[in-house]
Image (cartoon, rainbow, N blue to C red; front, side):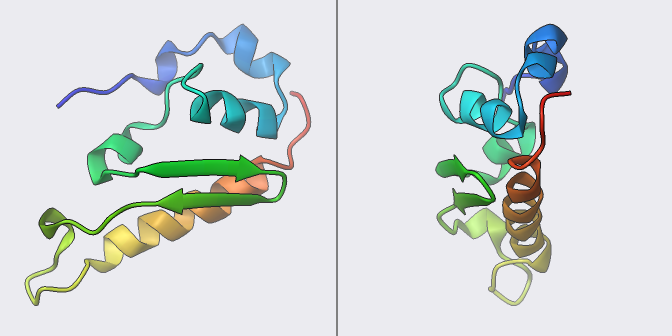
Length: 93
């Protein structure tokens, strides 16, 4: 299991983009996505100004001991969508 470290992105490039530009660059594969996306198996990431769509098909490794999706997984999806939606509104710098 491998991923790109978020620290590998060129900081000058990040600082030159506004929030939606940063997210669109991640969606296009021009900047590395956060490792949690690979860890949990996110399959879709569509940023728009003020809105971000994130998708992840449920897999057995997401289940809690009772056989439902673990609350932490659901919280991570919510955190990603909400946090990135706010990030999409940020200006350069």
